[in-house]
Amino acid sequence: MVDAVPTGAETAAEPAPPAYDLAGRVAVVSGGASGIGYATAEALIGAGAQVVVADIDPTAGQKAADTLGAWYAELDVTSSADWARLVENATKVFGGIDIGFLNAGVDTGGAGLDSLTDAAYRRIMAINVDGVVYGARALAPAIERRGGGRLVATASLAGLVALPRDPIYTATKHAVVGLVRALAPELAGRGITIHAVCPGLTDTPLLGGAKAYLEEQGMPLLTPPDIAAAVLGCLRSTETGQAWVVQAGREPLMYKFR
Ligand code: NAD
Image (cartoon, rainbow, N blue to C red; front, side, top):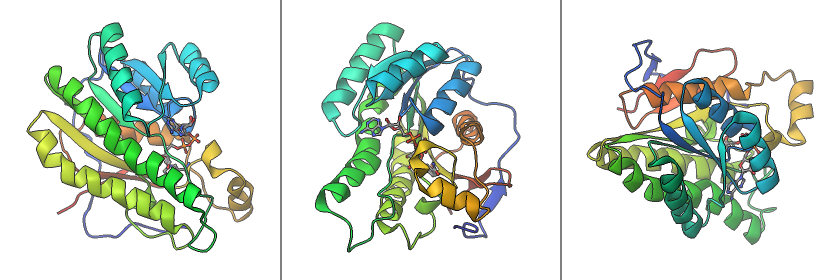
């Protein structure tokens, strides 16, 4: 269990009036069929955005889109061809894309060096890291054509602190945070802000069998709407290149890198 992220650079999320209006925006949400992606798609629609639920699971993705009043696009985030098709089709349907939430991700179930297979390693690196790189690369030009917009990637608290029981997941999420920080200056020049949202344990299917154990231990879990609220905070912010930390029982914090 991660107790707290490093201290010293935290400031309360700014309650300033929304600088970026979400109403009328077109948003692509990867991993939008379930958990954090679904809740964020719902929150975006609530804020007046049009949403593309982009997910590898066509049954759950179509169902989510139908329920939410969104548009479903089949997407494997590890395929740059899929990203290109998504951008082309969404541009045809909606006229452009303003926002990308690069959220699809998986866990290894805690596999360490000894138990990790090559296939499991390649899969988590491909989805959690390639998926964010390919997504940012595909969406940035489309967002730029709209005169700028927003990218947010889902990292984790494991993107800021080490989870010794989950080293490979930790590595993928540190990669996401590093990518966000390093891309921010270039994207700023193109009118695009980018943030990493860093949730603690959240009650979604990703927890799998660990959920019962966590509950037995009395671990507080966040809910997907808790994370969605933080994502909307990132989207509305005029800052860039920061990590937004969401922990159970605490207000979301913007962790500002110096
Ligand atoms: P989830 O399993 O509920 O949702 C993940 C979604 O991603 C699913 O709909 C799945 O079909 C989709 N997906 C998986 N592989 C894909 C691929 N190759 N291409 C497109 N879509 C794909 O899990 P969640 O908890 O909502 O996870 C969302 C993100 O949040 C992940 O990046 C995860 O690492 C991160 N996160 C989760 C927690 C947590 O405790 N649940 C904590 C911190 C960070």
